[in-house]
Image: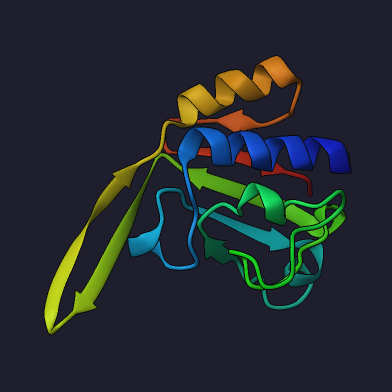
Length: 130
């Protein structure tokens, strides 16, 4: 994918799925991604809500934004958006939890219109570049 496609993908996903946060209980959207460097060493996946539009730069995401650190689009190897995600929170010694749905079908339709390559299943929308 080109940098412009990554920008459009992230902005479209954020618009359709909602505001992101670094923790699932505070987030309306949720995703996971890995980089080519991670695939060659420890196979780490980061997870977070989608970045705010002002954190989506031309070739990378903002340092200190929702994702906490910059990620260059050319380094992203696999990106996943689940149809639903689990959240939990402990506040004032009270445990709350639940699931949030994400309309990945609507997102897929918009991405198809925009010509952004992706794969949609019942469980996830993904972009795989490896």
